[in-house]
Length: 496
Image 1: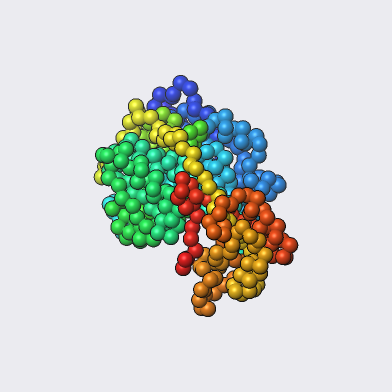
Image 2 (image 1 turned 90 degrees about the vertical axis):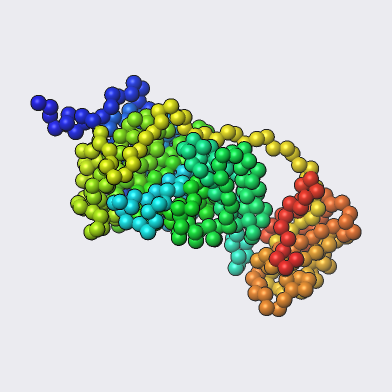
């Protein structure tokens, strides 16, 4: 007669010959509880993993490492190439950086994949047909993290968007759709306002889309896209968008499936991958055995597919579906009308393990293609170097003067080559011909262009700044204005 341990493991597959090296972080808050539950399920299902456990997060921050990670941990991540991470806590204040952002950007994990699917038979939702995938750019946009305080009143955050970055993530979205039999890819931007940065993202999307003629495409302005996603998410399939929009809308999409606690996330790059739940460390729930491990578990399923262990991934995913289908739910998804048993973190893991080898009865079982390769987007195409011509300079000034007074000072001290063309405040033109109703701060963008359309060079910009310095003008930065192949490479002021 077999013992209890043998019975519990009786459904696992034959072990894979060579265990896959995986770096594992137990995390903070609820992290250790849900990771322990997930690792038990992976082991019982027959996952072949060589686990290298590392310490990151709050304890490392508190030990004096502002990035929350040590050199030895970087070595593990780079050597193993796969990171299974429980949620971590970023301490507030003190200049601590987000470890998630640091890892994603440092390791080149440019694509953040967040499937959001409804399970209406067992998790109540207003959107039973919802089944979409958010493909979020992961490295640039406002998450460049470049911020400055420039005046008493004004702070700045730089939004950086590159053509190679847009091309990588958009190609990945199409490759993902093709590999997974998805019918449509939608692009979300705000290029009616951010015409150059979001405009570039939209432009690249339109350039790449014809290479995938079998896939339907459309573009949405982000505000109405968010409204439609919250109201009628079934109209979307794969959605691709810049970093900040993707971060916000993927959480919204996950929540309207029934719970953010069931949503997984994969971060994919050319040389590595990280798998995690999309939710945070939830310190108030820590140590209470009530957290839902599903998001992290389904991230583990995505990891197993990535590691070419699709049979194990399929076994776990179907056991999870069977568990929730039978009404065995943690507190976050427990509802009187759909739940039969309220369980804690450990109890939920036990229930999934008991169902390994079974499949859901009312929901469609999951099937993973053993021959399918992980989706890795092709490298961006080589970019032609444009003819770049300096045509002027924006000088940003800290001053409490009126626009008229500031213009007088600047014009008297500009020299002979560059003329003051306009002044804007928070992007709105206030000189010449500004409106008295426009509210102004102490932060002014002052645009200088060459007089009589004569050529301008870097020395002319330096001479202008030197002259303004002598006049005690407190300029805080300058931004050169360029044409690229004769096309304007800078924005106009609102009202210009």
